[in-house]
Length: 532
Image (cartoon, rainbow, N blue to C red; front, top):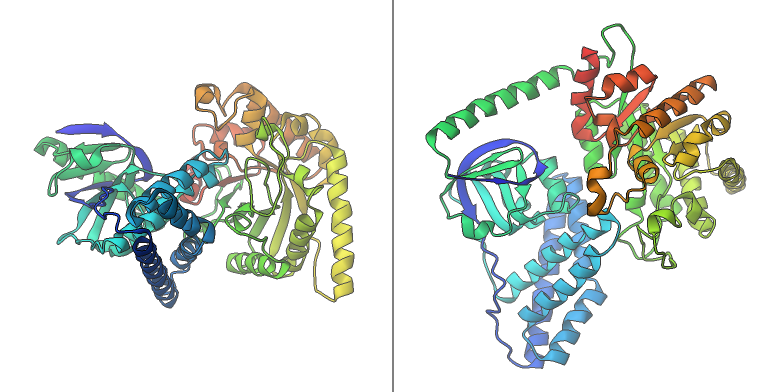
């Protein structure tokens, strides 16, 4: 019996036989001349694109919107001329096989993505691996053998194809060497609630087909003894009972034992997050991150495209509060159509509202879409990275301008409540000046911690110092809540601190009105609040 600590992508406890997905990276396809290799590549690319389009149509037919959305991203990547041309150039210049060229270019592109400061974009490296893997399989006509019984799938790198290839009943869990918490594969694993872990580099060498495997939260056990298996079976039952207890609180009032009501809202970035939030009976959305609709695209979404997205979310929430944050980009979150100047420290550079001055069309287009969508539900607009009264006044001026433009164009609109994110010490310290100007505060504790403690949250060297429970953070929260309430507005928390159950009572004592958490933490928070 061997035990390993692993990184959790989706929690759960499962016991079952191992089934290894063999995806060899050996150059089994030998060079046969430039012309022949280019033809081989073209054929593999066409097959990859064709299979993806067929899969996309299948997902739409089965009303699997999230899966279709992810496959569409992969189609765009498989058709990307920059990626394909780089592979062709590698074949011509270095005279290597199409298989090897895909391998090398994949590694080059992955390195570029991984070196990006933004966590979301760096984890798109997984999609490059995925498309490359499919192309290589199609070059050598490699077929995937399927397990004969429900199994725990062992792989070097978990891909969407791996998840989509197995019916939910045929897979007990996934174990992969490499993993990215924000990868599309991880999103699908969480959506389907398949226990998934990663982080053991040589997992394919450690496991044989048929070995008994246990995934238990952040632990992986290979060939456990009988005593351990029995212990895990008991834990499985306890976990299922706990989940059933959580579900009993679905739909109940989120109030303390002495009757104080606290809203539990959801932080969302995608349609999958929205689906999970609705399933867990969220009381609304406290943070809708819109920047992800602007990323991975060559041109920005139009006013009409954005309007349809926001309208759809509002209609699905059916009158519940939806707080939409305007695009929060900067040189740490690069997008194709924004020309960033290089910065030594992007976290302290052009971010959030600071970018709007340089890209007014981008900002105003989003505001127009939001004002139009406001007619369809309970919308609130929130602005990121505010540090001054001057910035709030600038934003309100733009709201006036776009409202007049919409009126001239004959488009229906409403001006919804508007608030700001408190995510810098500057904003918290002048919260008494900002509160009279806005309709609500929302405290982003992740960035507030980073800026208060002078610890870059992307820097692993200072991860131990990045303490969201630091007294300086708690004091700033208290100041913001007090200044919000003095001016008759609400104050919520939408950072990771909101789901820290050991601090829930402290935050409620401070007077925090709403907690906005990840979709999978909603029921936990409802349960916790009802115990206080």
